Length: 220
Image (cartoon, rainbow, N blue to C red; front, side, top):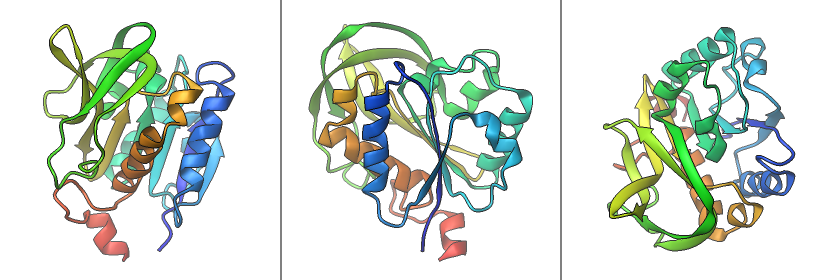
């Protein structure tokens, strides 16, 4: 069964065109997950949400209209998924409810530097067999929800900073990955796998307990 995806991707420098190329390559590597691209979430209210199982959000946009936010909220509440990457958590500052849906928001970042991404996952986790890896990227710091499930993190002054988290929103699934400032990190095999596995989970595949979502059960 195909699970169509709506890819919301835009930008020349942040995210860059080469980084967006690597995202499309990761999506194209998933058989059964055809995607349609739009440049903004503002397209969402005018689309019939039924055909889409998940939204992939890779943008750095300042504002979102109430209509677009309502459409996203309804999409998640009805069982849709969201995979958000990097600068998505620094977007839409005019709509605090977006950060409630996402599970956190950007606070600050330092320079592009090398850091170790470590797994916090249990063996049955959707990312569980992906080992620790190093990246050279912009490290985002976040304020985030206490109920988020943290899958990957890095140590910052002895404190765990989440790099990948998931959460439930209504009947929907949300996955956020903080990586993606540089094109090279988006092309890393480990990051490509995180994008693919995070999307499969968000779109209704096996969750971290190995169970199927209600939507997946209803459509298989």
